[in-house]
Amino acid sequence: MTFDSLKAAAALPEIFISLAACAILVLGVAGKKNNDTACYWLSIAALAVTATLSGMDFAAGTVAAFNNLFIADPLAKLLKIAVCLLSAGAFIYGRRYNRARGIFTNEYYVLGLFAVAGMMVMASANHLLTLYLGLELMSLCLYAMIACYRDDKLASEAAMKYFVLGALASSMLLYGMSLLYGLSGSLELSAIRTALAGADHNNAAVALAVVFIVVALAFKLGAVPFHMWVPDVYHGSPTSTTAFLGAAPKIAAFALVMRLLAGGLGDLFALWQQMLLILAILSVAAGNIIAIAQTNLKRMLAYSTISHMGFFLFGIASGGAHGYSASLFYVLIYSLMSLGAFGAILCLTRADHESDRLTDLKGLSARNPWVAFLLMILMLSMAGIPPTAGFFAKLAVIQALVRAELVWVAVVAVLLAVVGAFYYLRVIKLMYFDAPEEQPEAARAEPAPLDARLLLTFNALGIIAILPWIDGLISLCADVIRRFAI
Image 1 (tube, rainbow, N blue to C red):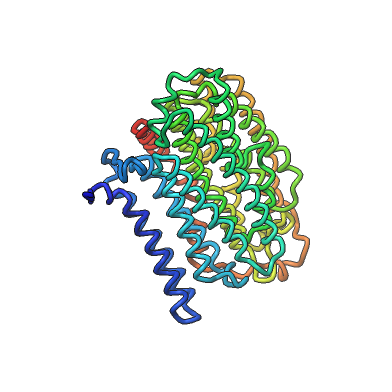
Image 2 (image 1 turned 135 degrees about the vertical axis):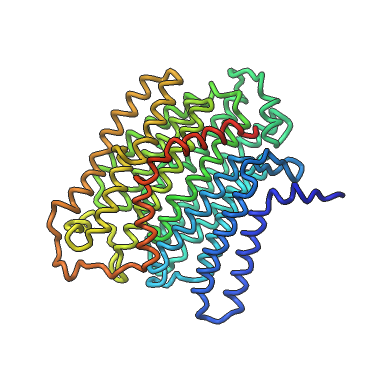
């Protein structure tokens, strides 16, 4: 058997990150007991190198490798770079938090790196088996990362809930994939699309396969009515893990939806479009309305995530290059905002206090004005208020809906976005207009590490600083979608 080195090089980022994770695992086991700091910095370096490898030959064409199990195209490369950078950001934000709670261990970062490898495999999947392999590698690592905080009952409960419902979603996805295999005779996404190109949409087997696939994806995305795990997992997980969970896996979710629905089931668009529209409307409505009643900041951001996943699905349901590129742009901006929001919580957290209640933000502008200012920018962006990147992300999705002649859906999306602005503005009101419930001396947080503070500054100000290049980023998203391999 001949070995095509050029095609194998397409998987170089995945190979490197996997080897790096194995090396860090061995270092942690065989090295000294106090080498966790070295493992942390090696993990950051591994993510930086992997992002660099992923960006090499970005403008090159599509390369298929390993008998078409794996594909490297501009979309996959862009998603991999985003996953690596967001994961590194989550690690930096969570370093002090993990150290204070006894989860600053090499195993934690090894699990994170293997989760990144799973996300990257999903981004390049051209086969149902590859897609499922990447999904389960990511999911299993996330379950374990949540459970790493063994002294906390909420974390153990969150890990168990996530595991049980994740297993349920995976079983549904597997059943849907088995039906697709029976209908098409192939596991390769491009072959499935060719085989089902002329399929009768009234065929019960085809409809059943699509329903199982969409339900499984809705579970993974946390879309209503399959969202029950999201608030409990976000709340119960260590905040450092919640930051990781709320950012990088959203990029992987886009890859999963694009490869499976837009790629393999692209010709059945009319069949799954209506399902996605229903899921999207329910998600934006329920997420925004229930978030208003929350008193815990992490739970509020969890319901916010549900609503943002609804906007993400609006873009996918719009179809075509404009809809998919709008969805890609939205998920990139949202992941950046989510990382920054949880990063702000981590910068405020003390060793003996989580700082994750809304009341903890009262009077924040007086005792920590810079973090309050940065969090205000992030909240305004999440609400979609100009001049922030979040506004342009929502605008791109609305324009895609109008272009797809789904004007009534666009109107509903705008109205629900206005409802959602309430709880984001409430956070700003608490920080700037309410007096703290405790004395400032007791409420003052320990200074966050310099790297975390600098990252939060770059993260939040980037939401506005990116505006001169916003057209370029939108064009980049449109270009990689136009060159979408399948």
